[in-house]
Length: 400
Figure (spheres, rainbow, N blue to C red):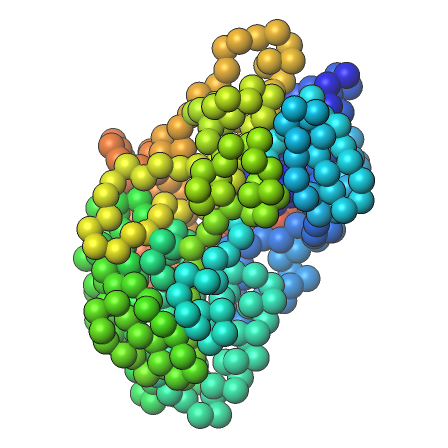
């Protein structure tokens, strides 16, 4: 029996673990290690501050479904791995593996600029989303300027855009929109770059949205410092802010950084081939955010990164599972698909409106790419959430 240890239990880790077991059956023992007992549908965190969702609506305990599908779940924090002895060390013991899948997700680098950790909010975690909910309730009592955006080296632009337009909608619902100067700040070369070098008509569409909703914006800027009531930009501009929400950059987690034998990159990611097999360690794999992704473009003035969203994470989890099972069966024809060749598929919420983004490749060159605005209602975003939660609760990782 081949033993695969999967470290990380979000989109990529859950998918990889379930698919290895489904395809490998009794020939494969799969152990998933994660410090959280819950699976969380992260894209819906943007709705938590506005009370459109509660945490129970977008999360569930994963141990039951993993057990039902034959995957062993270990609720523990993975500390490091020794790739020579092939042992993963956790705070609840050591685990021996034949194959290791690193699907650890990100660590958020709040130290990207002074004051980001202390004075800005972050919607990308349950705790951060709930703190924003409380902050918005306080904000209603004494409205002022709001600054929303992404810092230098950030890659998760989409979620920040979503939060921006949801805040704008919320301000109108609270009848305080006229009292609030709303600012968007981004390191992107232009509006709608998204870290994928844009989409056809994307910049024009977003400029139209910014004008329509009276949102001031600054592109090609870094965050120099955040204080209690200001955001200081790299161009010297000082923006007054009563509430600040920024998306800092992602870096590799401590598990990877504490494992030098994984030969991580400087930012803590795993160097892999387009099979998601480690470039040097043939029984080590990476999926999702843990993968090192090289940019196919050069940033003009301020550095920023490529997005690592749920869809590519799900896809790389499937590719890793397929290749591990193929090798175990004596096959050498591994499945290849570089990160940039994965289709771009995203539904960006815009405050009970949405923009459907689809392309045949995440990165250029592409033969098909389109952005479709839906100004009536964000029902596609809601349907996607319901579908993914359903398939995840059922353990149907093989579905698209």
